[in-house]
Image (cartoon, rainbow, N blue to C red; front, side, top):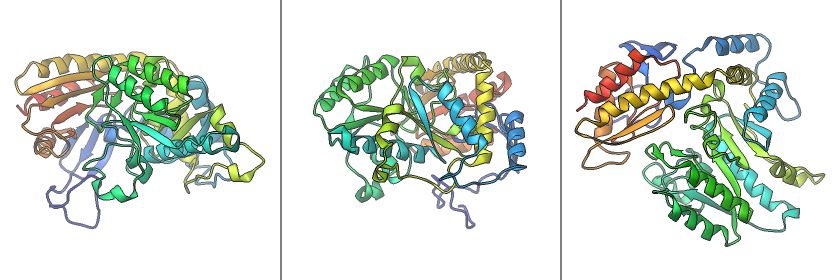
Amino acid sequence: MIDGPVWHPFTQHATEPAPPVVHRTGGAYLHTDRGRLIDAVSSWWVVTHGHRHPPIMDAIRDAADRLDQVIFAGLTHEPAERLAAALVRLAPEGLSRVFYSDSGSTAVEVALKMALGYWRAADRGEARHRIVVMDHSYHGDTIGTMSVGERGVFNAAYGPLMFDVDSIPFPQGDGGATLDAFRALAQGGQIAALIVEPLILGSGGMLMYDPGVLAGLRQICNDHGVLMIADEVMTGWGRTGRLWACDHAGIAPDILCTSKGLTGGAVPLAATLACEKVYQAHYSTDRARTFFHSSSYTANPIACAAAVANVAIWEAAGMQPVLDRVAAMQAQRLAVVAARPGWENPRQLGTIAAIDLTAAAGGYLAQEGPAMRAHFLDRGVLLRPLGNTVYVMPPYCVTDDDMDEIWGAIASYR
């Protein structure tokens, strides 16, 4: 049982043992009071190039010598301006405006508010207000993001605070039922936006679907004037084997949310990118049409500088071989574990691999989850199973030896 005043996230303090204390990080490793851990989940999917990646750390030190937090309403600064320009260059075509916040949840809240603000603008002539979501999705833990996520154990206590949404089924096979369901909703004329995790639903169990379905959803949005919001908080920055998951389908959303790997995982930052028509809907001499959102730490200069350094790594055009190497290492070892009894449903998308432990009861609260996590920690590997689903999402600096340790720990559970 954990003692002390700290209340840890997603932790049941009545049952969890005291956690290891991390005193140093570097590359793919966390050095703790109990020894070295391989960070096989990139510290909740944020660390891309590796912990304390030198170019990013150098940028943080340089920025901290010149700037700390600066109010971003009425003022600006070079790191934010440079980063916004770079994001527009790297983003899917048509995303021309960048709004900063500080976490994935807030990036999605911003996106939802942008979409509703677009339809409320006086010259739209339509009062659309419904949001469509995909079953089993997860978009964050604030009220708005919980509202557009799967209803269940994560948010059951907060039902009175959440707004109603329309849902479409998670795609099976060719996704025909999903596309038909969305088309029927879109034809009703009340749908303001569709929000999706492109190609892979993370916290929903690393559920994966075909790029053709994503392209089909984009086409239906086009046909019926529905805004598409792509939640690329987890999927962005190479996790799916491409810079953006949307790239696999060759589509551009109207609004894109990014965080986690935006700074290489070094410090918190988020951005919501919007197409020009969403921005112009709020652009007016009428101050009542202002986009009313902010957080105290919007566009923190030090975080923006870290993100500029991260973007420079991607713009150097050397990342695709790195992503391909990690994907190949994952595929080889996933196949080995999948051939063992007790494991099922192996799946992979780019650098992300997942497999399910055969269990009588699945889901997030499956009893096997905490037992597996403890087993992996004992073997020097940090993994956080989603119930009976084990996934591996390491930093891109991971080595063959690291992968052998990670997958060896998984295989040794059964």
